[in-house]
Image (cartoon, rainbow, N blue to C red; front, top):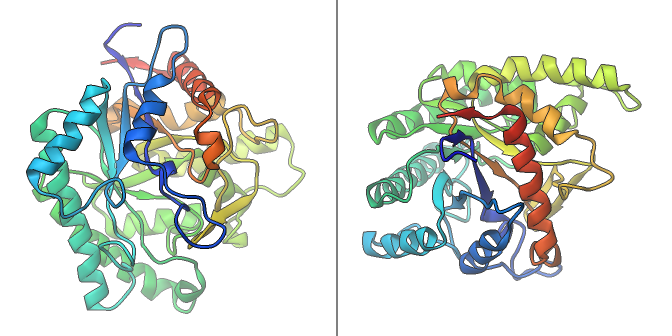
Length: 345
């Protein structure tokens, strides 16, 4: 493989955190050090992961960490031969931020989280461990019930918060990607996501993060039946016609991309519930031909500034995360995605 081959292949660190915790029924978090070790151990035909995408909150990162503390983290990541790509801003209530749909105080907290993420991004960029990637956000408004009380006004409020966030990012030379996922109000269907992106209207700074597990549920209209493009029992031809229709709408906005598998179910743990279920790469119940479906999103990816793709195994059980075969299978399918749809830098 040439070192000029893109996209670079990253593994996400947040599967060690999201849905984990100390509440009843939750599994304990897996440390950043351990997630790095598991990622570094994966190897397929002599090829390895190129980097990681990184969640900016405890226990992996103190968002108030000093520059020196952040440089030590950067050294540790680089010590495994990894780059840092996209960063996840801690925009949710209970972290640094609060809902983008809330009152002035809540929205100010949301913007504080974006400022914090931009500061950490700057430290990593200056260190040299980070050379590409975006900062991920969502509406931090969990569930769609409150949004549905006044969809138009609530989408406008989220768009206003996102515009302010995008201005902060632009001032730091960063881009924001809004995560399309059925649990986030205003981002919970392909149509509402598109409406929000257009309402923000800052495509050079704020784009879309596509995750293959979550966007599968967009097709099914799980939280917005009126926007369903498929019905249960669909044929293969119906699936790809619907998939192409959805991706054609969202691809021009897509600046960050997660390779993933979904079995058509929703899943959750702790406070993070009713979201697209991520499945192992070779899950026999998986609904997606990963390599074929990734191609729809990666068409013209280089022109949108994409330089890496990331696997998202969010809410995998700890035993699955600790199994080496899990990561080798993931790396194998990502190598196949790159072989089919990659490009030269």
